[in-house]
Amino acid sequence: MDQQEYGRYLLAMGGEEFEPAVDEQVEADHLYGFFQWFMPSGEGVDRVFEPIPGGERFLDRIRPIYEMLNPGDFTGEYVPGYFNGGHEIAPEETLRKLGQELIEGLKSLFSIVPEDDESADIAQEALQDLACVKEVVVLPQGELGKLEQRAIQGTDEEDSEAVYEALGDLLSSRSDYDEAIEILSEAYYSIACDYWVAYYLQWPRYEGLQEVENCLYPYFELYRYGYNLHWTKTTLFIGKR
Image (cartoon, rainbow, N blue to C red; front, side, top):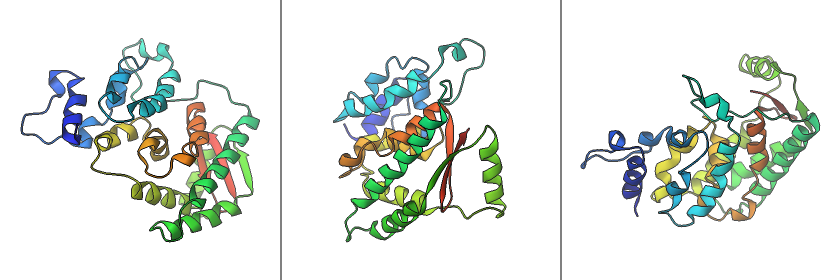
């Protein structure tokens, strides 16, 4: 099944109103919000991955996002448009541990990039930045937004962007943009409007990176607990969304 056939297969799951015209090209944008069709239980999502090679790996990745939903949120007139975590209580010790595990996982990822790889330079820059992160700090409710605002205004410690850039560049270089699963790229992003969540859920597609397939698992767990991150040169801050 090629990308277009797969895209039509997916849209058909929504019924006639979603089916494209015979001569219409299916684009990733057409599937924005696709995984929300299966809220809150995830019933039927297994069919999404049946036609593609290794589909079970993608299914295993996405099941937990349905498990974190509260069915009670879907009983009224208005229902959530995104997969919002935060229903579980996470002790500070757990959050700090996840932050530290994320740092180590990213170090492992960037460490396996060969010296002659097109992403080698920025991977090395990211490793240098990660080596400078000496502390994981859990912020009180509401403080993360204030920290981000100060960073925007340039009144706080310089942000660390190398890790974000290196991760995006590396995963882009390990992606086959012609394979069927690519048509779901916007669907994955629309789960939380968070690239790192989307990266984690799509990890089986990234060529040559399976030995570090869980490097973003701590980030995904923090997301499920309802937390965001803010990086500076020396500190990883964790705070409630």
